[in-house]
Image (cartoon, helix red, strand yellow):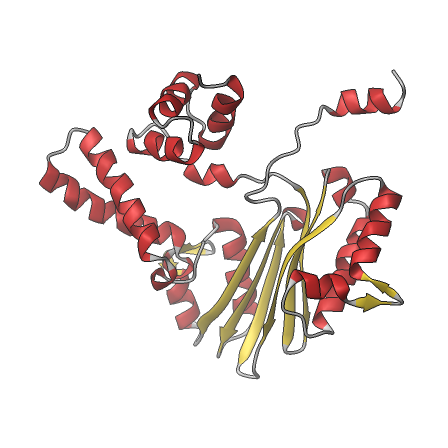
Length: 290
């Protein structure tokens, strides 16, 4: 028996209709991941990426200081708190602590001491004061040499943050690349960074799509190669059409300015996390004793 909540979850992830979602779940014994692939193979859902929709609230942010740069994600339960100056100060404190210290893991960061308190204690105290669970989710720290430049960009008030490193070009070009990555959601810089397993999985899905469209096997194979090219163009930063000039791709834009792309880190707040689904009106009523 497929539950209504499971159907609702699949519908939100894919945008497919209720009946199609129910059929997909029945065909895959209730597996959300397999049902998403089933819908894609039938050509019903083209939005598998929505399975990783923004779920938790909070902020992603960057800090650049000389040859060091940091990107972080810090979470809150509500967007209201994420916009609070006290929460923004917490994010800045964490950024400053990371950039000034040699840290490799989240635990290393939480143990850092700032004015007599660890980052972990600061978060616990802020949680108590604000009245909402706050958590430090992830970070990346980059260093560069003098031939490299950093570029960073924040989108949607810190819902998305991007940090890039480029060689032999300008900070303006690096910022353009970061802005592009924020808007266009590449998952890697170039295609050799996509695992063979992921490519084969995509190939199988595309083949099933073509066969389900009634194409003969040999035609289906040719269609798969064309659609796989589109998959690369959507996934790889260098192959995407550049947002400021769609007559060229990002690789060409950077090359035209003498550079190469070395690193790209893109944090989207809450990606892959389960969404809090409290009813705000009910919560307020509870607080008021209604």
